[in-house]
Amino acid sequence: MPTTDSIVHFLWNVLWRAGLAVALYLLARRLAPWARHRLDGMLKRTKLTSAINRLALNALYYGIWAITIMTILGLIGVPVNAILASAGVIVVILGIALQQSLRDLAATVNFLLFAPFVIGETIETNGTTGTVLEIQPLTTVILRGDNKTVVLPNGQIQQNGLINYSRQGILRVDMIFGLSYGEDIGKARGAAMQVLSADPRVLNDPAPMIVVLDLGESSVNLGVRPFVKASDYWQAQWDLTERIKQAFDAAGITIPFPQRDIHVIT
Image 1 (cartoon, helix red, strand yellow):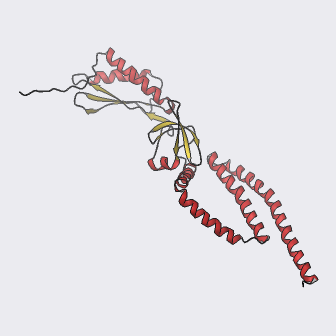
Image 2 (cartoon, helix red, strand yellow; image 1 turned 180 degrees about the vertical axis):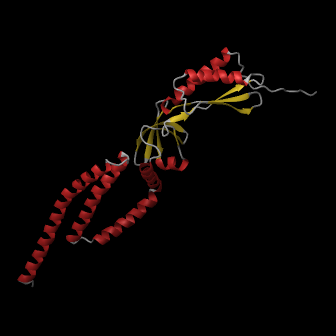
């Protein structure tokens, strides 16, 4: 039969643990928001992206609550070690079942940390070119030039690589014009350069280049390579291609079509 001392000791132990659990809960309610607010102020002074900031803030906030809850469970007699062991087994099973999703999530973390592209930049990846609308936990949303939205797994983007058209601020427009072998290369170069000089989108630094790329089967291939702002890239490419063709026509410069001589032996 329990004695008075044992009952008092039991009640005191229960009250002490309950009081400490309540105190830890109240402390966490104040500490978690305060710590998140302080960290937010520190992160705003850095050059990290907003996505990384949110990730760090949530990790700190929920990390404090996770530690608090596990401590409270231990105080009230819940076998925390068994819970952690069971959670570990569940994590392993989920990891095997969700390998692709975990690979996509790891790629997302890599994108947020090292920022190979950010929202608003134009990229080319996996056969798709467009503007990045969202970087989601597992996927990236891209808006193509035809106003179609493409959703790509982040793991696939990381595996296959990408071209970032916006990062450097300027891009080189590569155009090729085939000239007949009898044409004056200097005349064609002058006509093309006149078009480039008249277009305000073409930058002087770096200077545009007009070079002979190669000698084709039926043409001398002239490479016209001006630099423009990234935001002007596509429209400048289309406009300059048309205007240089018109300039060649006005100057009487012939752009040949492929020809092949066939000899019939009878």
